[in-house]
Image 1: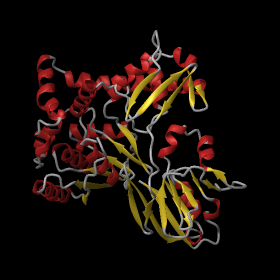
Image 2: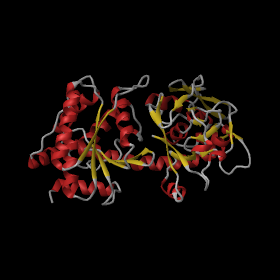
Image 3: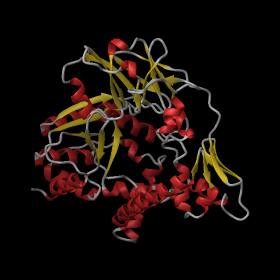
Image 4: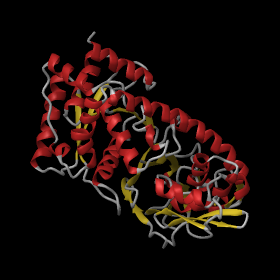
Length: 446
């Protein structure tokens, strides 16, 4: 077996992918993804498909890449699924981040997706994040494995493989690949790091990329320790919707930062400037207010600290066609609905395989059209098995969801305005599947 193929197998094992697991490869047609797809096809340990996502950002070049990806996959004997995925950018979001999210939404339909990030990509990411002011959590760089939602998982088996090894394998196999012209665009900071900074570091300090990748592994271990410590501090400091200052005062700054981050919206990043501002709340003399970005602030008042968000108008509910899907703003995540026939063993099989991001209801008990949106003030539902209705805010409080994150929750309502699903958490008792169910409404949050 080729040494590169052995390295790919070792990477799949480290990521926890067992032989025989169906794997979809994120396949751009570039050098790295071509080498990954070719190696996995050669070792014949995993049923393979290739997913090519065409954002259409580079016009004819994007279409050229799609055609090349199809041709290479055909040559390797792998089915290729090419999809069009226009990029929708949220306010303040970079084009790179928006494109990555669009790809991951397409990947989420597969259970296990492999992408071809290399050790050089890891080194570039660590440098980029360090320059941007990341803390230990950000210095973890690209993770070997992470969830994509709806039970899907993203794995990176090439993180310990140098880009030079990729190119050498392609030469041995005489495999063609395409080059994305945007990777040479100096307007992107990553291009400058890849083209100028990292090569200069390697010249001055040979092995720099390897050392940066090792730093990412160490940062991952340190982050796990900080998060475990933050679990204990958060439990001791939490007082309703506030945090007790005396408990936070005794914790090291990285632990305090991790505790406060739990009260912010999912994905909200604390920059170094935000973390420094937080530290000044515990200085002498202490400040009262620390900006946390995006209109969020930490407010120290007497013995407690509160995290307060910007005023927000309620979002208008979005229609959810059945069958069909709706794209939710600003996250650009999708909520999909379809109807299928129920069978005697359906419910048992569904409960065995389901994730929190999918649910099944009795279609005859849910009146269309459906809508999806955030919970309204005072809105109620009767959760499955409950003796009566409850306020959704109280259900979320019992589930440990901080008040500052409840505005991110979603509910699906039927034509009469009744809540049938508190997304990812509870279904309504009246919409449950019974032995008499003939048609099942399947809902998935992707």
